[in-house]
Length: 342
Image 1 (cartoon, helix red, strand yellow):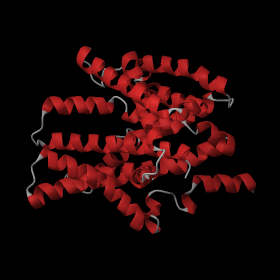
Image 2: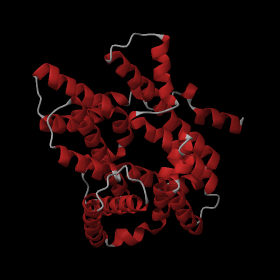
Image 3: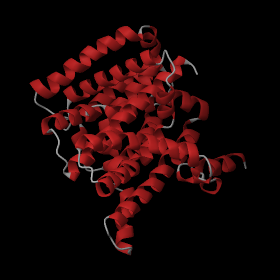
Image 4: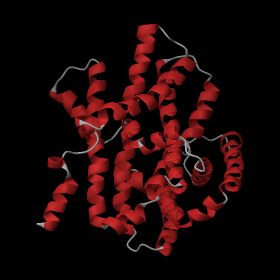
C-alpha cells in the first residue's frame, strides 16, 4: 500500500469514528441517561460542524479520475449500484426493523411508512441520497476535466451554500446547495494534494491551531452551533476537514491496520452501525441493567465500529453480499454494459 492512498482511508476512518460516536451519543441522550449537558452539546456541535462535510470532500477526490476512466455515463450508472442499491436495501431493512421493535403491526400503512423513507430519507441514509444527487449534478457541471474548471466551481459552490434557502422546498436540490461546496473542494484538492503531502506535519500543526481557534471562536465567542448555517460555519468546516486530512497524511507515513481496515470498509460500517449499537444498547440496558452513560458511549461506539467489520469479514463476502451489492440480475451497470455492447 502506498502512503498516498493510506491517508484517504485514514480520513474515512476518523470521520466514521465521529459519525458512530455522534449517533451513539444521540441515542444515549434520547434514552435519558444522565450526561453532562453542556459537554454533550459542545462535542455534538463540534462533530456535526464538519464530519459529514468531510465525507463529501473525500467523495470528490477521485471524481475526475473516475470520470476519465469510465466516462460520465458509465460512472453514473455504477453509482446506482454502489450508492442507490444499498440505500434502498438498508433503508427498507432498518425501517422494517424499527417498525417491528416499535410494536407496529404488519400492515399496508406500516409498509407505506417504511417505503416513504426512500423519498424522504431519515437517519444516516440521507447521506447516500445526497451523495448520488451531488454526483449527478457534478457530472453535469464538470464538463471539462481540468484544473481551471475545478477551481472555477469553488466560488459557484460557495454561492450555492450561502443561498440554501432558495432550494429548501426541493429536497434533492437542498442537499446539493448545502454540500456541493465540500465535494467541489475535494475535487480541487486532489489537484494540489502534493503540496500538503510533502510537509504534512507542518500543515497538520497549522490546521490544528486553526481548528481549535475556529471551534472556540464559533462556539464560545459567537455562541453558535452547527445549525447556524452561514459563511463562518462553512469556513470552519473546511478548516476542520483540512486538519483531519493533514493529520491522516501524517499518520499515513506508517501503516495502521485498524485505521486502514475501517477506512477501506467504511461503507459497510456506515450502513450497519445503527443496528449494531442499538442492539448492544438494548442488551446492556435490559440484559445487564447498565445505566451509565459513559459505559453506553464507550461500548456502543465500539460495537458500532467492530460488529459491522466482523460481519463483513466473516459473512459479508458470501451470499450475504447481496445486502451491499446488487446481484447480476439487478445490476444496472451490468444491464448498461450489455446494451452498450449488444
